[in-house]
Image (tube, rainbow, N blue to C red):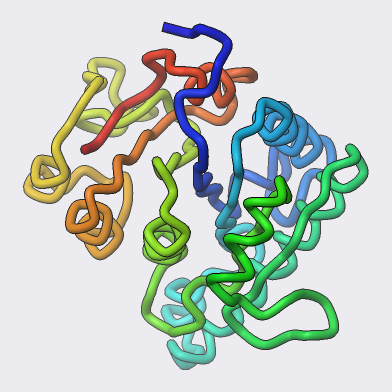
Length: 239
């Protein structure tokens, strides 16, 4: 039930790069990123400490580049740089709304953002700053879902929130199947055994082994992020 008070003190929000495209076919939709930034600011204004991991699929995806013939490691590094660009764009949108925001990269790019240092990241959060974790884990072959799970565990987040374009986890793709059934709650092992395509297995196992609950919801439903954080039964809970 929504009491108007946050149910969590510290959260990590995972956004896909594709989410930043809005109605575009490629790149970043400034209007859409402003809307998401406004929702994040609303949550931050409630006193919730907010960190984000943003994917890079709207610009480059390492696995896709590898399929096109580029060396997989090179492709993954290009994908990491794409996440840095997305984080810088999101930082700009958040700061224009009057919030303090820091981008911390797993790759050293001192000219545009800070290096990721766990203690410094926690210090930023303690001070009420929104923190964006860029460049994945800094290693090839790991998705940004895995990076989000890792960072959420490292900063001792209360929950990892996975933003998607559908209303939670379904037994099959609800976009393609009108009879798809939504789950309100699942166990981590059910997600793995059922091969439910919400996150890659590495990310799911990392959350399971560290007792980090995951909530999956539709970022396109305006206001749902705040309602979820204030305790409403939004989306699907995995724990």
